[in-house]
Picture 1 (tube, one colour):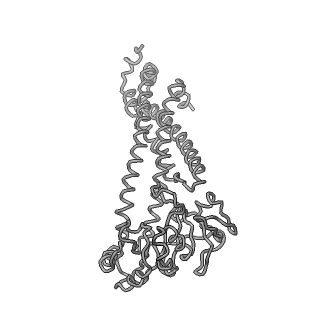
Picture 2 (cartoon, one colour; picture 1 turned 135 degrees about the vertical axis):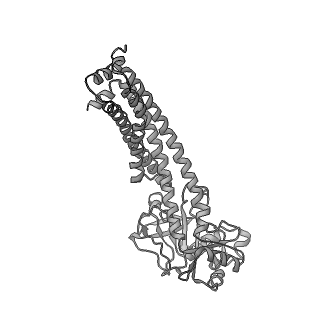
Picture 3 (cartoon, helix red, strand yellow; picture 1 turned 45 degrees about the horizontal axis):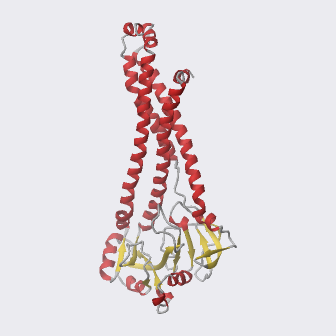
Length: 387
């Protein structure tokens, strides 16, 4: 309590100093929560790509293309040595007018031919209703992030690109791509995919021959990255991507993006640290006679230093806690506002919360070191004569 009373002797100055730390931590929490959400999405992608090869059309980005390709490629890929199973799937935007440029994963439609069953290790659980079955038609399973925006409930219906589908299941939250997916049968997705094609070629295409990607499962011991090169060489007009391709195209750029986000936030927090240095330096100057009296009656240099470091640490801690609280509220409010459009950008993780407050506390301690050292070095006789 004595430390708090000393800090708030100059209330306005103390509040402004703490406010500087608060704003810095607020920036760190808000921007860091975006980085945490994106990192989890990418980690989910890394898990998905870890043991397989993804094949897509030659003109798209490997693994992420919505370009239609033929189901005939499945048999051709399975004929490659080292391949044990190939499964066709479709992925496309849920809203045809939605921009493909998003922070994170856009709301999408997913469908597969169920050939991955028994081979796929990346799973998402249904928490309400049931999962899709191979003979399903006209039904969907909804990702957790889309429940609110689509007003979905098991037994109810939703509109997908002008078509009505019954909701038979809702997926549990994974904090990865399936949270923003509407899963349906491959046949239903093929009909929607064909409807997207230009009218001039729509009538000449058989919908049941179209998919947008193929997941390739390998024999034990085969390296996915090496097999991606083999498949790309042996099968014409496709792109094949393994785990390394995902790392290069997505994870590495995101790492740089996250570093920029954290750097901006840390700079904001360091500016708050400068205000602590200024405040503590002024405090030492104002309390020079007090320091002289304490040293004259036997206070050690270490005791003087501990006193001032404790004060700066407390200011850092208070600012950190306030910044964390405001950051959590802004993140929660942002997610609430974005729920209607399935755009939840923020995720305040325990490591981010603890790290932000710890960083503010350490910054407070470091900011108080020089003023505390200066106070401890004062000559008691000179300090007592200070006006």
